[in-house]
Image 1 (spheres, one colour):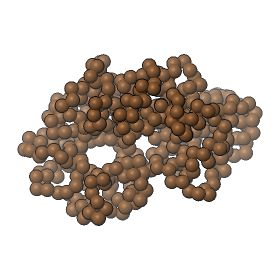
Image 2 (cartoon, rainbow, N blue to C red; image 1 turned 90 degrees about the horizontal axis):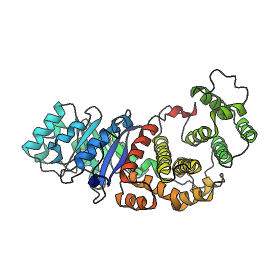
Image 3 (cartoon, rainbow, N blue to C red; image 1 turned 30 degrees about the vertical axis):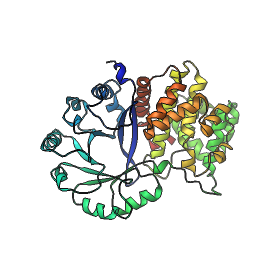
Image 4 (cartoon, one colour; image 1 turned 135 degrees about the vertical axis):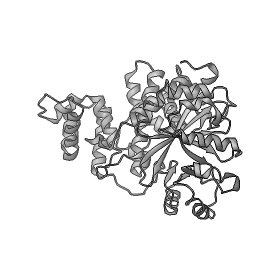
Length: 416
């Protein structure tokens, strides 16, 4: 199914939703039109039904989500639309906007959807009013937008809502302090990018394994000789063991006697070795859970690579550079250091540095596009499209869906 012209400028954005252990449990999917920044599905936009069916059909969003659910905003008009049948009940949470007029028809439709197996959430909730009482027994989640409720009023609102629904979700959590406050108040779910905000700690030193990993990334980028790489690996026994496990886990070493780290690097191949190192930065061997930063970085890396394929077809070096830019863009949040401090351990090409520092060039535009899709800044997405030849919104969404599927397969055992 091809998208009509008026649907080509609808962008697929997404935001992570985490639980109390800061583990990823869902995404909110934002389908935003280029002519406005509305996140909700609305029958007022002609492309809506086409886009939703395309996303869950041709783009394979259902498969791309993997084990995670999708939260989707629905207004009272689209609530009645037949296109809702394309949404899989077991994987979708329908968000009913708090600003909607609650009518008997809305309540009846919500009851019908709940009976069909859909999970319902009430969005942008700021207070409990009499007209919303009929919807409360149907809802499983209430979302509280932190920008709409003062810090002073939040405890009282939580105390009022807590007995009414199974789960409370704090939305637009942008700082670690906000997360800690909402955690203490008893929120169950959290939406926002507090976990990806760099907290620069003066004087913080990188761990030896992190320094070794960064040094190896730089060596591969400079196309160092394999014996040099082997020597660097030997200086970190734990990393060496993980490397040998990786060769076996991907099946490349089976049936072969791996007698040296040099041979392991050759069997794995430079590209796979480089990408394993980049993802390894985001793993914590003391935890078995998947870091949301790992998923986010993997998504940025793969998305950037796919966009580079469209923008610079046949250019392998551009693809590799785009992947690296996507991965490294989140290292300040991961390591608690400035980008300057991190890049001093690397000898990266000027285009990669320009992209990471100033969002300059093709690589910078690709990274800026990835960041805009995360935040839902559609006007910036459109500006980036003008900088990326051979790419349109439809192809962009396909890249995003494919990258999402790939990133969701990346587990905390990437180090094995």
